[in-house]
Image 1 (spheres, chains in turn yellow, cyan):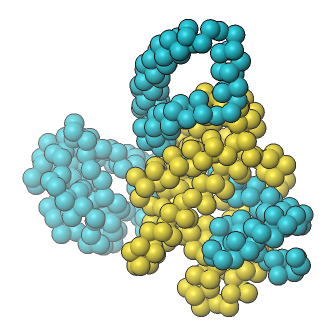
Image 2 (cartoon, each protein chain N blue to C red):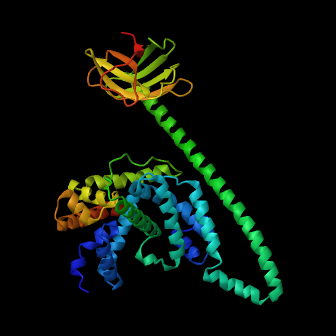
Image 3 (tube, each protein chain N blue to C red):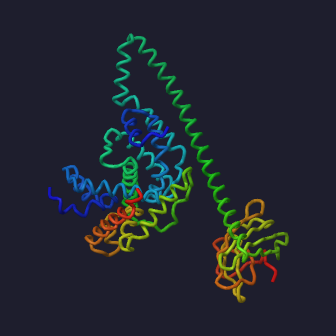
Length: 181
Length: 259
């Protein structure tokens, strides 16, 4: 029953539609809120979600476990598609949508809620420990889907400073979370 | 290509914060085989997957999975591995028979796919419903636990609130702890009119302080968590106010504690 994520992707690459369903069940709940956070409109987000898994199905054969876990693979795909979508919308409307000014997405506790709550606590603590300047830059990119140039303009900072803060912030985040993952 | 100009790009790339042009250049650099950048992108990717756990999981609409699987099923036969299997099977069978049975197999398959699709939709709807119920039960359990914890504390008292003004039948009980706050339970209050809600006030030194707005369910009941007040509370009251709440009471008092 509990297929490893890499096995599911391998089976998808071999054309196994059941594996695609199982893969979706396992990861859709993880990535859907990420897409909603960036795209904001739940209907648009659902649309992007389907696109993400459709592309995953098509790209399964190209998945290389050495380049990242299945989780990182699908999360990266989801975030990239969501950011593409929100940038396309922004270009079309040419009005700037201010990011991250609303309440977090609604919670839907699942089976292993306690375990996930613990994970979440680790991450929240790690984010909390970031210096404000680094967290701000990361959040604008992470939730707002802004490019580093847009962030620099928005915060009135030199581009180099934004790049450095982004890198230092992510490095620190990685270090803080490392022992627990 | 030199690694230097890309040194700081991996983080921005992993975050999806590179502009189109920069993104293309960085991907070219990655494709060129820079192990250092590939390693950084991989590690940042894993970190961001960990961060993804911070967002509470959300159940996507059930029709998405059904639509995805339909698309997958429609293309499945075009995928190389399946075609190879089909070819092997076809080779072992007479061509005419193949034509007929492939046709009927196709019919049967498409009918089953439709049924499976419907069942998948149903299953995920049921699952979504169960999750909702589970969430509701968890909320109630959390509330019960909070109240039990309060009741264990000898400093906790129960304040009775009686109906007043427009709703004389209303009743309320407030489990109250001066420093920990408490919970208000009300019954027999009429549902607030559209755009309105009930607002609780803690009154200390003659000054009412807002203590949150709440609505009652169809049976006229509600529970509402109450934050601790900065000074000992002499009186609790509930008024009918605009939905968003107001800083000082404006509407009629519907419940009040005895002095």
